[in-house]
Structures are given as structure tokens and as C-alpha cells.
Amino acid sequence: KETINIKKKTTEEKLQEAKEKLQRNEGNLDELKKSIEELEREQERVKQEEEELRKKEKLQPWNVDTISKPGFQKTVINKSAINRKPQELSEEQKELNLREFIKKYEKQLKQYGMLRKYDDSKKFLLDNHHLACEDTANYLVIWCIELEMQEKHELVAHVAHQCICMQYILDIAKQLDVDPRACVGSFFQRIQETDNEYKKAFLDEIEAFKERIRKRAQEKLQKLIEEQEEEEKKARLGPGGLDPVEVFESLPEELQKCFETRDIGMLQEAMAKLPPEEARHHLQRCIDSGLWVPDAKSAAAATSGSGADAKDGEEPVYVHVKPKDSADDSKDVEEKQDEGKAKE
Image 1: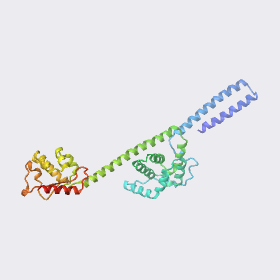
Image 2: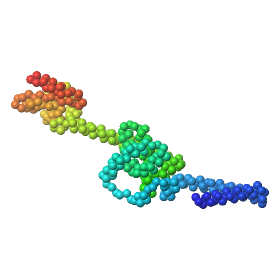
Image 3: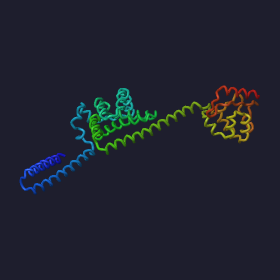
Image 4: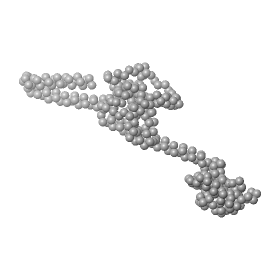
């Protein structure tokens, strides 16, 4: 770059001198005109070289020289801290540190997350340099997921922008092996002054990040639904540890109708049509799931038609217990039990 600047200055001086001589009619006019034409062509070549160099500088990788420009060293940072290698921590310790960090700085983290202008973000991070760290990026990711789960899509886009800004700062610091606090000013200078190609890559990364957030939020919601269903299933389990809903759905259609109508006579007829072992199998599963509860008498009558024997000659009575999503309450159960006893 220095060589180009010297060549540019020298060419401009020679061209100016030649034009002045031509105006004063000094020397050979034809030679002066040729010299001016050649110098103008040289001046154009220098401009092209200067433009190419400018493009290369915009696309060049981050390095110590570009980071350490004057004007970005006003924040006082301990030099030993910049070059100190971070201590390897366990996942448990990282999680504990993140919780403590959030507890201490959550208000400032939310303030940064709601900023939009680059200059405001730059000033805020320079004033609060402790936020230029991985914990801030992690907090913003968590916040984005929570907002997406709440379907606050505009806020997600807003916070995602700030998260990617922080991630870029962290990536630069990692590439240069320096503290992220030393990279804040330079990042915001570059993102504001760079060409369209670099800015497009930045915006593309934001869109890709938002898509990852959407997928992660869907996964978490699905997990919550599954956990809730599992809790409901555990609450439904009968005395034998079976789920009444699953047992009901596994029954033959004819037996399902018996339970839905609570018709003991129909149940006895349906059981009589089944092989004895199959009838006992279905009946025991219904009892273990709490789908049907036998009273103090024997459970044999329901399968009497299929060869089961009643104990002590007592007639069994079964009480219906909410198949599927039935809205019947305990009063309905008691009424059905009374009806069964009245038939005795």
C-alpha cells in the first residue's frame, strides 16, 4: 500500500509539472503532450491498483494489524488477560458459571439484546466489556428459544441479530487467540464499512441461526408435550400398573362396546364367544388397568359363558371406570354399581 501511495504521488507531481510546462510553451510541445498522455495512463493504472488493494483489504482475514488500529484501544484491558488461555472447565462448572453470570448481569444482557444500531451496541459493549464473552452468546440463544416457544417471532429476529454480532466477535477473538473484549470496536467498524458481500454473509448467518432456533424450539415443545403425556399416563395407571387407555384400545371391538355401554350381560355374551384363555387374558388386563373393578364377589361370571368357574357360587359384579377420555365422575360409577346389585 505504501508503494502504491508513493507511485501515486510521484505520478501526480510529474503530470502537474508537464501540464505547467505545456501551458508556458516550454520545451518540445509534442514530447510534452506524449509525456502527459503516458503519465495520465500511468495515473489510471495506479488508481486501478489502489482499488484492487482496497478490495483485498476488505476481504482479508482478521489479523493483529487490523485489530490494533488507533482509536480502538481506549478501553483499558489487562494485557495478560488478553493472552491468557482459558482454563478447561467441566460441563457442570460451565453451567454453574452461566447461571451465576445470568443472575448477576441479566438486566444488562436484556438491554444489549434489545439494541439495534451498531454504534449503540458498540458503545454498550465497550462500556460493559464484561459482556463480551461466550456466556452472553449462550444467554441470547436461550432467550431466543424461549421467545420462539412463545411465538414472539419479531423479538426473536431482534435478539438473534445481537446474538450473531456477539458470535462474530467471539469467532474473531478465537481466530486471533485474543480476548473478545479486544475485538469489539474492530468488528463494528468492519461490519459498518465493509462491502455488500461480507454484509450479506452476516445476514445469511442470522437467517440460518433463526432457522436453528425454530427447530430447537419445536423439539423442546415436543419434549414438554411428551413429558406431560407421560405424567398423565402415570396418573391413569391401574392397580396392576397398566394404562386403561392402552388396554381399552387393545380390546376387540365387541368388548370395547361392552365397556362403553357398561352392559354386563353383553360383556358375558362377548366373553362367551372367545376362547377361555383369551377371555381371561382380556379380563385380567382390564382389572389390572382399573378399567373395570370387581366388587367383593368373584370375577368369574363375566367369563362364565367361556368356561370360567364362579367361586363359592357368588355372582360377580363389575364397575365401569372411565374408558379413554370419558367425562363420567365417581357418581356415575356408584349408580352403575347400584344398578348391578338391584338385578341380583
